[in-house]
Image 1 (tube, one colour):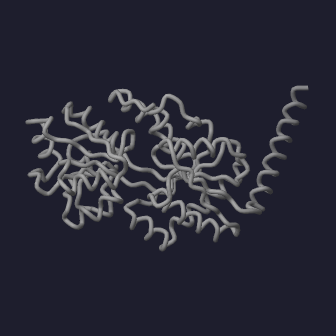
Image 2 (cartoon, rainbow, N blue to C red):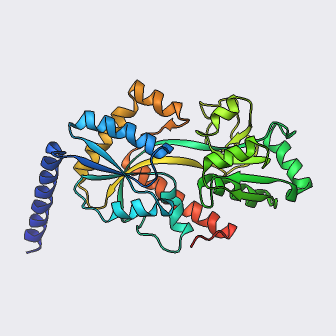
Image 3 (tube, rainbow, N blue to C red):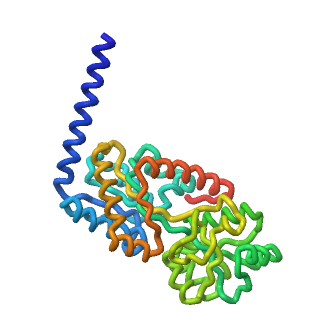
Length: 323
């Protein structure tokens, strides 16, 4: 009987795989919804629209953007988690996906169980900047100034729990300097505060900051990526200036609801990997200050696990709470 059970199990598995492959071959046969858990116009929305256009061209069905902003991305991510796992709901997430599990007491998704990662399509490091009137030219110079009078210096960030905010908190914990972090309501106001010299230091995502760096209105001190950014190649990483373990970026990931067939996931990943190498897509995304990643589903799943654990520890150590 045990041999019969094994044979039956193998047969069922083979039938399921064949059915999934057939489904993926025909997929999609109708329009696909792509949820963006943020308002229109932000970097995640811009990248999602580039990806949606290319998926529409590559798969022959319209991919329609559905902006569902609110609660740090939780509203849109909860909606996607509850959607049918048939390939007709996709979601493009930013780093709030891996930060929110540690930041909020309750969220409407499980970062490991609610979704299947397709790809981390692109990522951008955060950047520490200062107003040009600040004497510091390097991170070590800046920290020396801050050490003399920590209460004199503040760091503007885009908001509590954003990866730039957590990057500043992580540096604070690492250096044991008690400088003040000032969370604003987005990257624009945070960058503007440093440009106006209302706050001396900024830690923000690279895309909204690069024009001010290139225009001389801000001085870049260090980036938080594992390598230097092509947008500002002369600026060292935080690790290069002596502070290990500070890596942080803003990811742009594509997910589907848990239960979506492996064949559909593979087809979507194939489309993403191909489109990200197209010169017009590459130029557009790199022009926004992002690096092309196009990671595999397994690599993205491993990244999610590492980052959820990392940022949960930082949030706890910094005593950050969001109701």
